[in-house]
Amino acid sequence: MATPFDAIIIGTGQSGPPLAGRLTAAGMRVAIIERQRFGGTCVNTGCIPTKALVASAKAIHMARRAVDYGFRTGEIIVDMPAVKARKDRIVAASNQGLEKWLRGMKNCTVYQGHARFESPRTVRVGDEVLEAGKIFINVGGRAAKPAIPGLDTISFLTNSSMMAVDFLPRRLVILGGSYIGLEFGQMYRRFGSEVTIIERAERLISHEDPDICDAIRNILEGEGIQVLTSADVREVAQQGGRIVCKMSINGENREVEGSHVLVAAGRVPNTDDLGLARAGVAVDNRGYIQVDDQLCTTVPGIWATGDCNGRGAFTHTSYNDFEIVAANLLDNDRRRVSDRILAYNLYIDPPLGRAGMSETEVRKSGRKALVGTRPMTRVARAVEKGETQGFMKVLVDADSKLILGASLLGVECDEVIHSLLDIMYAKAPYMVIQRAVHIHPTVSELIPTLLGDLKPLG
Image (cartoon, rainbow, N blue to C red; front, side, top):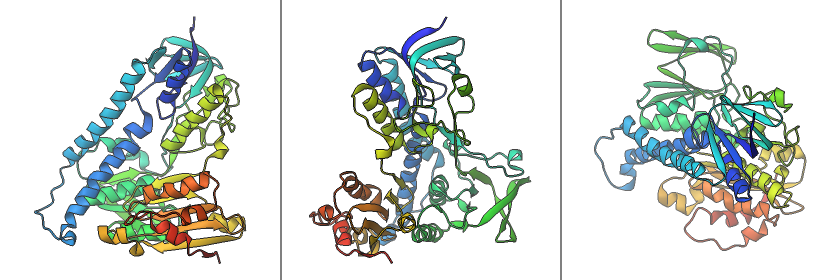
């Protein structure tokens, strides 16, 4: 006989726990299921641990630049077990705190184990069957495994298994030149590894504008990272104590050797072992759960939130999924996924802040647009900090005067991007921020200056 609940939540990523909080506060009896570590990708193998590692790598990098700031240090010795221990303390505080909160939540029952649907209203966890009229799927995703011959014969790393690394790889080869690959590549180069990044496309993070891609490549190569693009990896093989990656670059055969290989070639949703077919929940050809604008699946009473629905691959979009579901269910507020403006950061150093459309997308749209750009060398705050790499670019609709998008590559741009994002959500013309008086000296103060010098997008 099934144990009855008002709602079942599968997974404790960024949308699951706050949803449990709202539903229980509304008087519902909730079951929440977690098969591994509380907090999902962000807390355990994504945002929190990687940004902790990025911070350590940044401190090491700045220590090596001591002479640039007028002082000298002794030899910089990187203690990788200590770097990992710091990261682990930060992660533990988050996932343990989350677990404690859920276990102490009134009207919430925590189950640990793998959940599988038995019907549209029942879910099995171990030997127990749970039943509810409302079920929320929040199972996240994992690293994709590319179909490269020989990959199964070597011991390779992913963003998850990198969290257990407490040593310095002598030579790290990274398969994939997007966010995960670039962040790990730069941090491990700063830790002291030799690093090669191999990307199949013509450019790194190829969905960005070419000028952004090229600037990021220059930043990474300037730190001694080898970047290979247009590289089709044909085979990987273990040869003694080394791993050899064989590839073709524009028809020319090349080989790269490494002591370790990190596979950073995209993500896949954790939906293949949930028994979704028994519930009638439809997925697309990549395994992402199909949802509508309110995140309802093809089965009434079942919702999908977070990375598994293919509508966003970030912590902030997962949390927004929770807000959308809660607003529709509990607040009589018809919030929609389509109201969301695409925004994200790439946490290399300096970071890339992105919001809205890229220049490439604006050009393809055929609309009349204005563009403003500023190199970071003309930002006083960046000069004072000794961090002048990168540039800012903002695109504006020439008729409506609304901001279409922005690409900000430079020091503190991961925060500066929000000043533009807020104006975009307000649907206010760019003149609102262009006429604002920003504080000097900051990076943000260059946004009004940039917007005061817009030119037609040729």
